[in-house]
Image 1 (cartoon, rainbow, N blue to C red):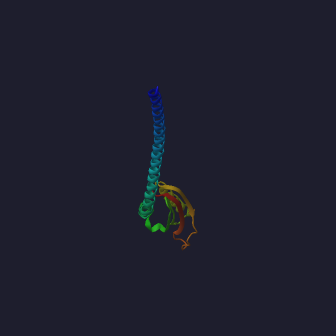
Image 2 (cartoon, one colour; image 1 turned 120 degrees about the vertical axis):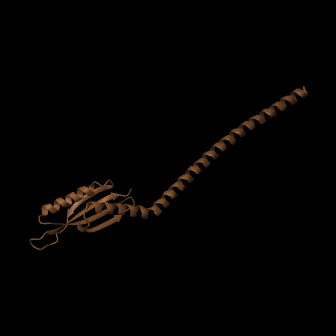
Length: 164
């Protein structure tokens, strides 16, 4: 009988040890799952931070050249549309993604209607630039001329252009 009781005690202890081993294995698996998801989320967060820093640096370092190229391209296309002797003033105010401009054009014509038609033609040609987001034409005070000669009439073309 003693060996049978001893066998039952050993079997009970063995069963308890297997149950404890199983419980600890489950705890270990839960800890590994939590740890890997934390590491994965930290990796993702670190990658997002690095990507954000990269784009900030690219924007900061690339801004002057991007602005220069956009403005130079705009001025080059303006030269193809408007004769340079008619350009009185050009102001460009660059922003982060776009720039605004104000172009003052002096058109010599005997009749105001002819000058206005020429200015509207310039506005239409500039409005066809693909990067133009907004454009307007306004009349500026006229410059007095000598009677019988062509009078210089000033027009202001203002707008906003996207820097691509």
